[in-house]
Length: 322
Image 1 (cartoon, rainbow, N blue to C red):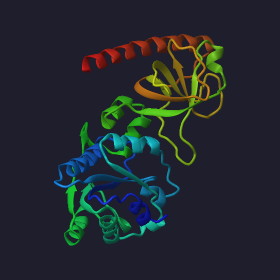
Image 2: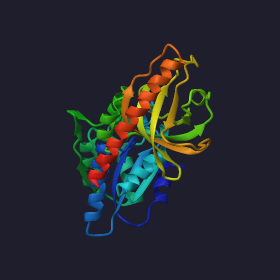
Image 3: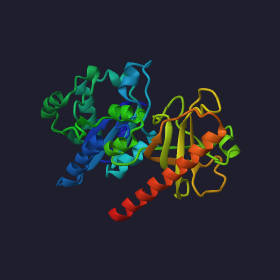
């Protein structure tokens, strides 16, 4: 289906405040951009809708298909996060060779014709159209002809750096989940299905949930190898403390495949094939290879104690904020 057909499917006769991007992770920078669209739409004298066009995969994948890339959340989570910010209409679009070759003028005309765009909201360094020629100034110039206004949103700064999805992926790869939470405005989480693993944890008294996330076609960004204090959220909404291990279990020499295994504290139920989300609070330590099972068990007991202490403190912080 063509881009114009996709946009026409969402036309309901109302004028629109439109913003465009991948919005991977829906971080604080994205939230400022999307929030501006909501603000303009709600502040309009006439009934206006806020619209976010989100590229299913970022343009860089089309432009550089061999480059490594992973997402900060699934498309479904992304769409829900955008809606949660008050955006009325979210339109996922595949960025393909056809979309890549659309000129900024054609793109702007398409938005005004199909969505009655009256406001276009541009983020820091944003550019649309062929060869990224549709920057904010170009879109303003086109807007004077087509009758829409352009609003530019400044970058959001965190610890001296502009918040971006690429920066978050870099920080996440270092295991600094606290900083990631600061840039996302929420804790980083992974959602997947519990699958059967090697049963190593059960053999040593720490049965773990082996969580499979993402896919080959849609890989998800994983924090650095190590042990994390985390919250495990079950598919029924129940929250449990969890010590989560990410890595390849070097003590057992199980190979190079990375696994995500969560030991839920004070929990005894079968989780096989259930959906599970892990919210990462703090990295306790890097992954280590121990001299034997006894040394590993001793450290795991310490990890569980540290996890409990951290998450009990986390609960107290939540109670104070509420």
